[in-house]
Image (cartoon, rainbow, N blue to C red; front, side, top):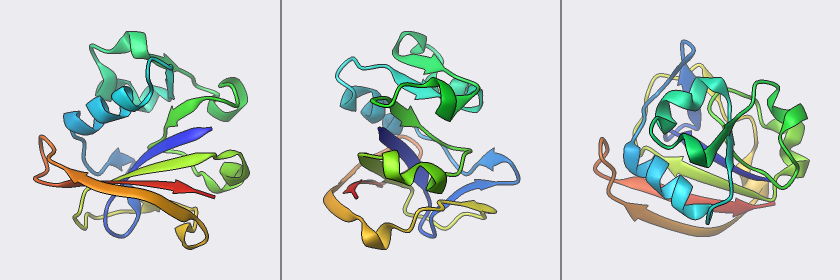
Amino acid sequence: MDVFVCLDDRNGMLFNHRRQSRDREVIRDVLESLDGKPLYIRPYSQVLFQGREEAVRVVKEFWETAPAEKACFIEDLPLAPFAGEIRTLIVYRWNRRYPADVFLDVDLSGWRRVSCWEFPGHSHEKITKEVYCP
């Protein structure tokens, strides 16, 4: 599976059950990366994809329901139990340190970063996109 996540500089994902930040340019880039393939999201992430419902599949029982070849946008689930199934991990970095109490639980030091580039966001001057493979 291909997994998309958004992280701060300390790999933070959430704070007090809320996303740290959001950016419409990240959402645009995620959807463009899929070449028409559906993106599996959890109900928590629906608000980010308003107006683009045709491109997403909302799944409550996420890991059990979505197909193995899926592309997923994860904000609120641990990844470590499914790290062996991840083919590509696409990380969008906010390039900031936000308060966080939920962090990415996959150690990226054992992964190979295959690409990295920056683009201007809507709410962030610079967003860094990193693509990792196991």
